Length: 211
Picture 1 (cartoon, rainbow, N blue to C red):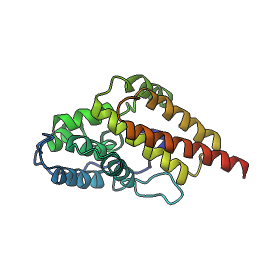
Picture 2 (picture 1 turned 180 degrees about the horizontal axis):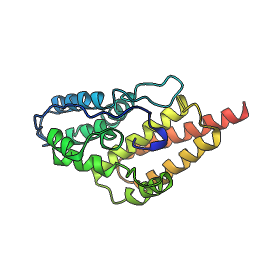
Picture 3 (picture 1 turned 180 degrees about the vertical axis):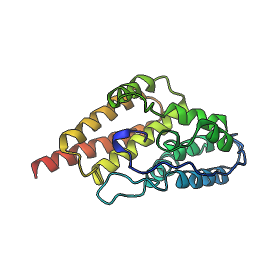
Picture 4 (picture 1 turned 30 degrees about the vertical axis):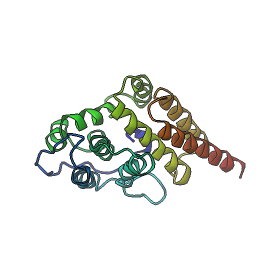
C-alpha cells in the first residue's frame, strides 16, 4: 500500500541490487522472479517499520499483498506478483524507476508506477488522486491496488497505528471504499475479500467506540 497514512517510518537508503535483467514475460517461471523481488524489497525496506504498536517490519506488508494475490485470489502472473512485492519501493525508498526497470523489466515498472503516489503533493490531494486515477489503471495495477487495500484494512482492524483514533480509522475505511468502488468488475474474489475486510474493520472500530 502506498497509502502514506499506513506507512512505516524509516531512513531511506540507496542500496545495491541484483543487476541481472529479468524476463518479464508472464509465461516465464514465476518463482525465481518473485524470489528476487522479495529479496530486493527486503533490502530496500529493511530500516522501515509499520506504525502498529509492535513496530512490525515493513516488509510484512508487501508479503501480505503477495499472499492475498497468490494464495487467496489465485493470481499467478509473475508480472503482477512482482509488482505486488515491489509496489512501495519507488514511493517509500530511494529506488529509482530506472533501477526497478533494470532489475524487473518495463511491465513491472509500469504497474508499480501506476500504484505510486506523488509525494510532492499534499496528502489530501494524493488521496483524491488515488480515487480519480483508479478507474483508468491497467488490469495488473488494479489487482495490486485491490490486494493492497485488503492488506491495509486487515492491519487497521488488527494492528492499528497507535495514534489513530476511531474517527481516523473510519475515515480511512470510507476513503478505501471510494477507491475500490472505481475498480468494481476487476476481480470478483478480491472484491469479496475487500468487502469482508472493510466490514470487519468498521465493525471493530464501532466495538472499540462502545467499549
